[in-house]
Image (cartoon, rainbow, N blue to C red; front, side, top):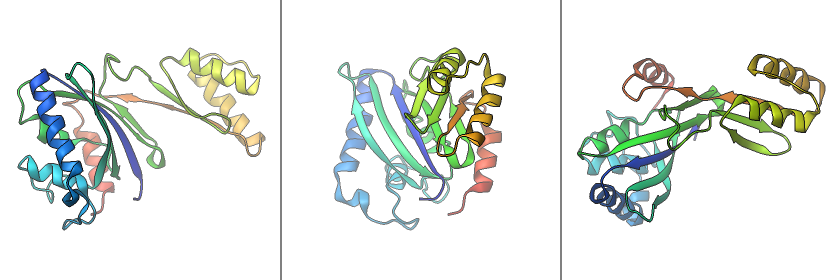
Length: 208
């Protein structure tokens, strides 16, 4: 799948509604028809759109669900999606519109387009605001820039303070040390109801 966007979700609400959604999604995933091709290709998320009354040809749903879990209290649902060229959760806008109490939080990561976004303004479920991608440890998540600077110093023995200096020193490090790298990404925090600009951008990039 080109330009793979990995999105982590947490859906919360009243226990009865969370459990109802869990059973519907879990039943869908367990059904062998889930993996059959649709008119859009191999698109399991299209099945989610269909069972909640949407049109897969009008809602971006090229992708799949994985790691579906419900917490012990029954009031939180966790899962990931892998989608093509789109980091926006229109599918789940449709889904939660069928319930009275459900809301969702997400964290989207698409490295090819340098797209890192979350709607978790208060950091309730996704408090991390930065990702450090290094040759030594791979991806690591941090809540504050001070932690990222400390991580950079531990790896490179170069002391930095603040995002601007970190980016400058990381650029120098990446250009001077062959085979070693330190990339830093910052999550954009968006209001769940105010992402029309981002949606328009990704719709222009999408091809079905």
